[in-house]
Length: 144
Ligand code: DQA
Image (cartoon, rainbow, N blue to C red; front, side, top):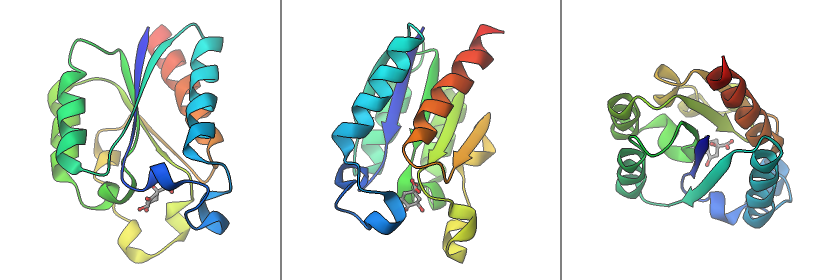
């Protein structure tokens, strides 16, 4: 099995970025957590991070027939991007949405998630461990 792990804008600044909300672990730590979680389940993975909406759309399009599952934290694009929603709908690759923080307890403008409309599950407020939970969930879902 092969998973694509997508992170949106400013996730590359983890550790530096509002550590009281996003924690002190950096993007490199997130990448090794993801690689280890996939390795334990014998899953191949590719990690992709971009600050650009169109680049994320291109990557989702490339996932068609190339990946079995997607784990995505669209970051701020969660709350604005119909283009990312449409790309996920177009390729039909099972997708789990992750947020490091608990967006349900934050500002009003974070209460909308377009990606939630297509995601088979949303994990939030678990810190970077949420990515491991997403990988495990996707693995179980696809193994059924
Ligand atoms: C985030 C939550 C978003 O509202 C925010 O814009 C982010 C990160 C999270 O992981 O908690 O950049 O997706």
